[in-house]
Length: 203
Image (cartoon, rainbow, N blue to C red):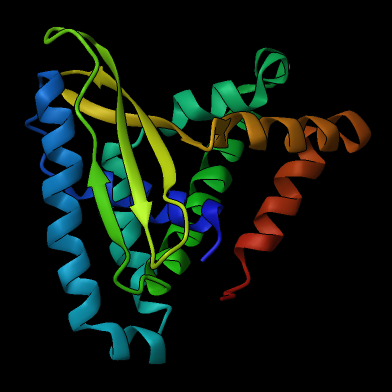
């Protein structure tokens, strides 16, 4: 599985925990405990999901959306174009960007094949409002893949707003690609392109 798919796989797992977390240790526990629970379910239902992959979309959307800060991610991704966008454009972009991530996460979940995940010690003050949860994914004899998660405390619960794979930010990566698209054809064109892509179910 590619590094980007692994990042998306592990990111989705962060969204499957009840919103009770408050301390930095809770952020780490959220990642670790939820990962263990969800991966067990993925393995148990592997054959069913492979035969009907579309079944996982609603599950992922229902569990991820409440625990991800999609508006914040959208603001960061669009950068200066966010400030210039109308309210209607902002709403449309958030909707399509969320759908894009959810569908990509769901597809990544289907590709899980029992890789080992190591959770590294936290490096943050106990009362911090922003933390980085560090993990490494190990598969066979290949070098471990470092994947770090940026979470922000929002109304008493942790929400994901970025993922860093080998020091490359997922949000920054999208920002570069989207910026090029907007510069060439405008924000409405990008939204239309995302909507078209989201209308297709692919693996």
